[in-house]
Length: 317
Ligand SMILES: NC(=O)c1ccc[n+]([C@@H]2O[C@H](COP(=O)([O-])OP(=O)(O)OC[C@H]3O[C@@H](n4cnc5c(N)ncnc54)[C@H](OP(=O)(O)O)[C@@H]3O)[C@@H](O)[C@H]2O)c1
Image 1 (cartoon, rainbow, N blue to C red):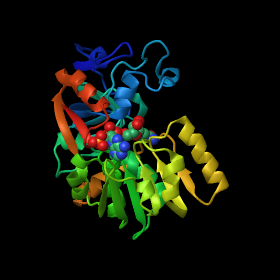
Image 2 (cartoon, helix red, strand yellow; image 1 turned 60 degrees about the vertical axis):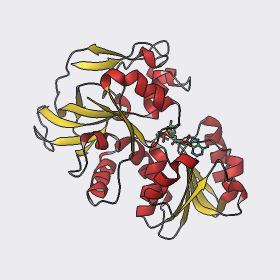
Image 3 (cartoon, rainbow, N blue to C red; image 1 turned 180 degrees about the horizontal axis):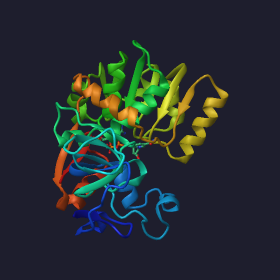
């Protein structure tokens, strides 16, 4: 089968499309013929080992996993012994969590993983734009227990995680303000944001407003500044936090009534099933920026890595 393989950390050009062995489904696994995947921040961070600490988990000198890609949408081609929930011909989408391997024509994955039947009302390309951002946002939004009428600010509202956070907070009845650049105002409004702040013209930390929940999806503003815009016992979600923000968040949570949430999420089946149902109820829509072919994977990585994409970048296979 064809796959985008990398054997060393580095620039997008380390990704090479090669012929590799097609996997076979083991016991309780399904073999998915992948129709679309996506380039997410997790992929380019692993490709270039950024942050450096990536090397302690994924291989110090060279990557231990040679095929990136954590999201997929496709058709079940065969099933291993004992598979109960899926059958040949099912259209499925999901996330591989930390095992990757979706930049390929086929993926073998345990049926107990983060997989669900693809929503009938979206294409495979659109489905590939769902699992990464939406499940990350859902994880934190569930923990924050957002209630109808609460004021929620989403910083980075045009990215994969931020565009999902806007839609999910809105679906829970929150009053949502999105922070984005001028070019993305129309997009963020179309996702349901009640208000949009253009960060190139306005600094939300200086407008006197406070919010019950601040969801910072991009980590472009210091916690010491943004925390001032959080209500007395509000919740700050720092989904893109590095180690310094994690430590600062822990300190704030321990020493004040404000709560700060950070951490790396893991992908559970219940969350992708929840997203399938939300999409089929027309309460959530995929946000797709550009679509590339597998042969253009290096180009797609170079674009995603710039940090300006609108939602998601898909790869059709
Ligand atoms: N905790 C976890 O488990 C977890 C899971 C997934 C992702 N992450 C992390 O979350 C981060 C974001 O991921 P992503 O995939 O959503 O990124 P992304 O899709 O690349 O999004 C970046 C978006 O942010 C906007 N942006 C840039 N600067 C901004 C600013 N100063 N204020 C507001 N918006 C700004 C960009 O548009 P403009 O440049 O046009 O403004 C772009 O639309 C990554 O660092 C990733 O590693 C963490």
